[in-house]
Length: 289
Image 1 (cartoon, rainbow, N blue to C red):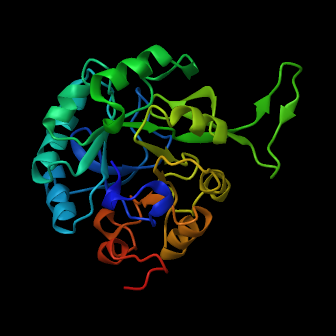
Image 2: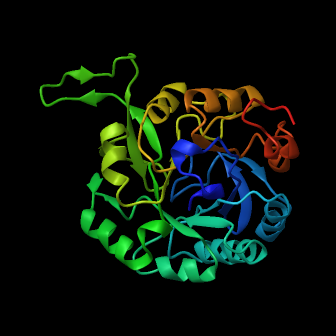
Image 3: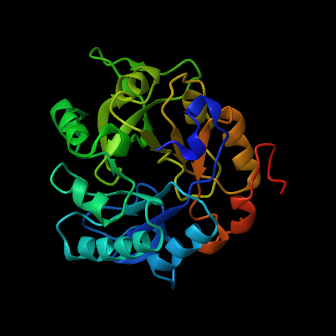
């Protein structure tokens, strides 16, 4: 999906809404804290169902939102997540992408439920690598124009075969894609070469800076510099750590205005300090309305 008919190079930064669903409830959790065996560190549990947020985003005309199903596929809680997601998509047909437990087998079912795209990570990034058979099968099933690749990542020091630890030129660790609710590192580094390679398979990239996700502690500037300096033409949405309009300014500046932003725990509708309506009306020249 290309919002407002503009490619990545011709667009300005837009706010992209989200609905994270866990145990059938709309929640905001701390990134990387969700595991199969224990509950996540939770910032906020909404008293409203997902349908409420679907109506809100539709009324505010903010398309391209992300619904993320946080429970493990195949559990009764995952089915509850799907029911909530379906209610939201009925309120805003075509207004949401959906991710969490997406496979070749069920991808079309979510499109038929009303999702504009499916968002995929773990199914494609398997055993630490890119499974091109699965990736190609997904493209054949739903089409490149309905596929979003989630390249959410965490920092990790790269260790060579001789035990040498390598870091990038800024002195920070490299970023590697993580799967299975952000618990498992892959061997796939988030870099320009990876973005170039995967741009032929996806309509968009969704990239959470997992190290700062849900912490409201500021954005991951090093990651944003990598993404903002990429010259490809696939839209990118960044998530992670946004806690203020100054952080939105930072995303706009480091992303050169070409990277969209999604905000969770910091929003007033999720118990945070950033006024939702001000975020919706954020302009290219800052947060002035």
